[in-house]
Figure 1 (cartoon, rainbow, N blue to C red):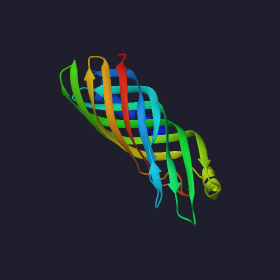
Figure 2 (tube, rainbow, N blue to C red):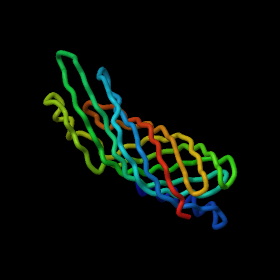
Figure 3 (spheres, one colour):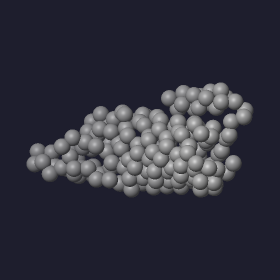
Length: 190
């Protein structure tokens, strides 16, 4: 799936042509993630993200990215039959492919964007009660989701606020979909 998203980004970039405006940059930020589950109290975990982005086009643009992130969730149930608490943290490789629209000037530019994201789980850290210990081995390595958000560019500095929703389950055993808010700041190198 990762190769498919990168191939699609390359194909679109080539079709835009050599006259297209291209910028490359680095970005980093913080995210607030939660894994939604049934009949369980969930809490948000604070995580990170850091990586690279490219922006191809001007008024309408394509923005492929590649970044590392730390996400997860906390769980608590006080049901007498299935009482448990726990925490899950993931280290992920993320590949969003966003389509956006810019409004403004070169030195002050506002943007809106949206598109799919592919997430590959590189590692996980699980601390769950004995009731759920088997679930720790059942996390899906690959997940698909979507991102929508807005951003601003001030000169070479760029900032984004995005919502990410999960379309696939992170675990078939107990968890549903992971959702998060992410705030990032970047710097355009080109």
